Image 1 (cartoon, helix red, strand yellow):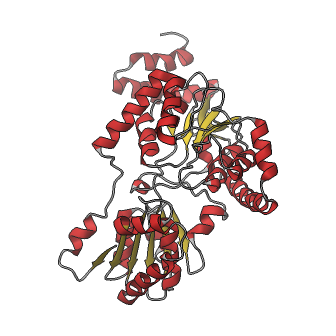
Image 2 (cartoon, rainbow, N blue to C red; image 1 turned 135 degrees about the vertical axis):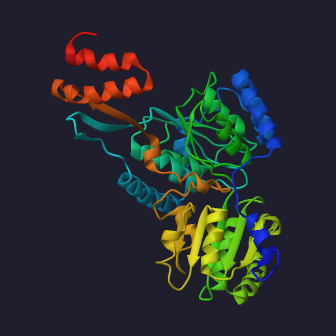
Image 3 (cartoon, one colour; image 1 turned 180 degrees about the vertical axis):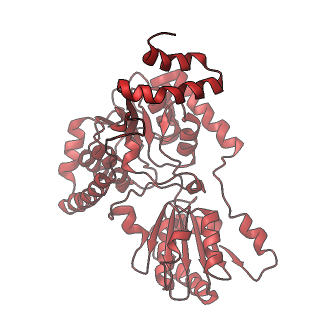
Length: 431
């Protein structure tokens, strides 16, 4: 862990290093570009070779897809209590998503033209669900359910399988519950490339959603333009902004909850209380010893954890806006004046009893959020990102008569005579 203090002469310089932008390394860009090119040019053959190389799974084009019998058997074999809590999560996320759907509208502008917007679901979307060291069943609920709420007819999911070719039973049940229409047991940058370009087995999609490791995120970044992309959600992270009222045990638990995701997780505590930093350090050591994934959590604490003693909460807000955390836990005496000043966080969890884990699993908003500083430019995943927007313009003859002079003058200003004529011909009946 790295401990920074506002009393240090180098504090300002250290804080500047926390002002992040999502900029991948040249090595990562080149490596992922190679994988994308292989799948684009080699189709199924390259995709299956990558699955064996990276996941250790020997698949065929036929076995790549997950069939209905496998899904039904997985659901049937799942304990009832697991099905019940997945149902609770799905219900909350679906209800939250439906509130965010964009609705068609029309109005008349000043010249009497009828203008408006129409929102339709994307025809076919691809959703990436991480597997790896932990089957992220909750990510299914937090992504696929939004496509379901938007009415997307074709919801294609790619998720890595184990070396035995199997996909976690709870994940398959969640995919069924959330409305996935196609499931493929492939992951990584190669799966993202397959969704974008298509192969003989996997038809291309119109937009790709979902989180992943740095390779998945970089693949999405590079494929923007070939296909629509939601955002760049990578390795998990949290920032806790706290004053002396915070419970150190709660703070440590929240930091560790993100640390156990993976060795590249990021954690930051910014507080006005030096005593809190000392107490959190002690709690981290005590609680870490009880975790089954303590080796992973320890690795992320060693390389990706900052404990920052700030001068005041205003400086803490500056740190938050610079670091742009995926999750911000705000634990202060009075949060109301602070909330409007926090502009870059993916999600904010307010108070002593609002752990990020509730947002991860149950609350309602999607837990797919921007990381690595991308929160400066991207919001979290929302249902309206599964909708296409189309504008509508309809003019009567009278409305066209009122619009023509302005259109003609603006067209003349830009030197676009044909534009002007396309308006005047409707009013004068001649060129």
